[in-house]
Length: 146
Image (cartoon, rainbow, N blue to C red; front, side, top):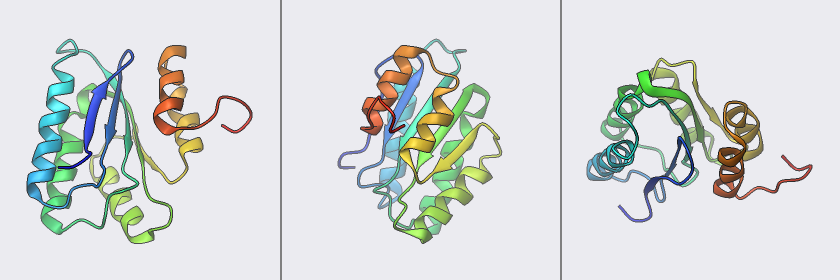
């Protein structure tokens, strides 16, 4: 599964990085297990925010896409907001991920091609400490450029 990660570093911000992304069903199932493990560190009824860096995700097979869509929809009741960062230079992948986010049927889930736009939207509901961590996760500055 390579560099795929999921962790809660600060507060209720769940950080997901799909790098190099889901190349097969085993990768998707591995990410589902990673997310479940992260959620086990939170109270069972705790609501959380998600930032997901999927810029390295290739176009997914239909089976990988279906399992990924299910992964997104499974936790809808606990998600305050979820933001997925997609690769701006790959319109096919961007469109596929946009469709998966839409199919999760949660208006609090969005996809972005810009880390700055993602930051602006997600930080609206985060604490100061969570927003600072979000900037670090996205590797964006703190002054004027966000």
